Image 1 (cartoon, rainbow, N blue to C red):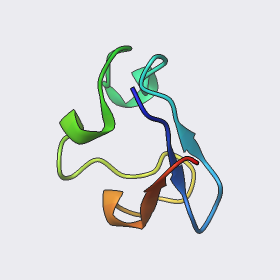
Image 2 (cartoon, helix red, strand yellow):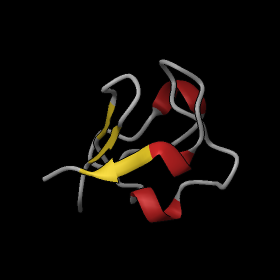
Image 3 (spheres, rainbow, N blue to C red):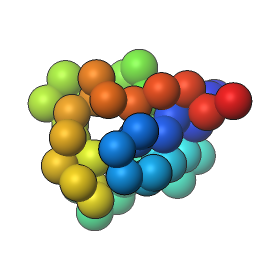
Image 4 (cartoon, rainbow, N blue to C red):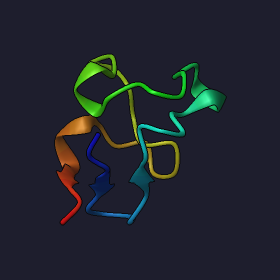
Length: 53
């Protein structure tokens, strides 16, 4: 599964780790995150994330 980076703040969403503090289980692909999920660091939406190269 691909990692995604929040361009404004640099947070990396790693699907193997998920985002347990916000109810996202490990193993959740970025594409499967809820549409209202936001970056846990800066609070911006999924639309500012890009696939890590």
